[in-house]
Image 1 (tube, rainbow, N blue to C red):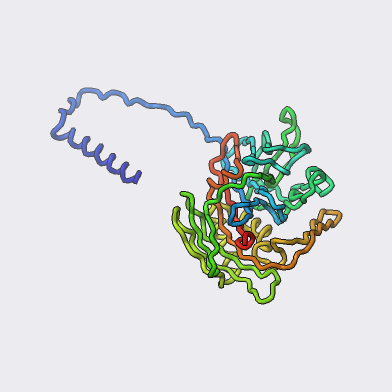
Image 2 (cartoon, rainbow, N blue to C red):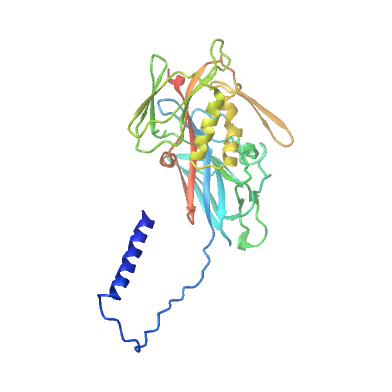
Length: 371
C-alpha cells in the first residue's frame, strides 16, 4: 500500500510540473538566471549495533491452570517454576553493552546462570553484558558442589546447560571487570529458573469429555502460534498405545473438539518443532529444545508421577532417585503460548531494548491429572 501511495504522489507531481509548462503560470524569461539550488548536507553516521533475543521454555500444568515452567530436562516440583533459556543475536558493528533483568510475576527466582553467589530474590539481573560475535560453545557450567547448585534441594538445572548450547547465537560476556579493563568470561546464553504461587491464566481452556474427546476454547484475544498436539502416552500400561492428534488451534473466542489420538508420534514431534519455528526460534534453537524435551514429551522413559534422573558432572556421576509409583497412562495437550501470555508469567527487561524479543514457551497440560 505504501509503494502505491508513493506512486500516486510522484504521478501527481509530474502532472503539476507538466501543467506549469503549458497552461499554468508563465515561465520566466530565458535570460533570467535561475536561483542556485539549496543543498542540505547530511552527515554519514553509521547506525549503531542492535540485537534480537530468543527464548524457549516449558510450561506444565493441568486443565485447572496449576502450571509449572521449566527448561532443560529437569522434572520440576509441583509448583509454578520457570527456567527459560535466553539467546542473543547481534547485528551491526561496534560495542554492544546491555543490562538484562528477568522477574517472576508474584514469585521468586530460584537459580540463574551465570551467577556468582547470592540468592537473586524475585528477579535475576546481569548488568553490563557485552554481546560479541561468535557462539562461545563449551561454556563453563557449575558442578553440583558449586553455587548455585550447592544450596538447592530440588535439583540444579544450571548443571545441565551444556545440552542447550546453540551454534548461531552470539557470545555473552559477563561480568565486566571494574573499570572496563581485563578479560570477561564468555557464555553461550543466559538462563533463570523461578517459581510463583500465582498460576497465570492460560489462553486455552480445556474440557475433557466423556467420549474421550477434548473441547478446547480460546478464551483470550491472541492467536496461538503453530498447531495443537494432543498426546497419549501408555507409560508402560498394558493395552494402551502411544498416539497423537495434530489440529489447528481455535481462533480467538472459538472452540475446537479434538478426537482421541490415533496418529503417529513422529508427526507430533515434527509439528511441535514447526510451531517453535513459527514462534520465532531458529533451527539450532529448536533443536536445543528438542534435545531437552523430546524424550520427556514423546519418549518412553519419563512419567508424570515418577522419575529416575541421573545428573553427570565432568568428574562424578550423581544419581537422584524418587519413589516410583505404579505406571499411569496419560493424555496431554501441547501448544506454544502467545508472547503476551509469556509476559504474564515472567517479564524480561533489556536496556537498551533489543530490535525484537521472541518468546517460545511450550505448554504441556496433563488432561488426566485432574480426573
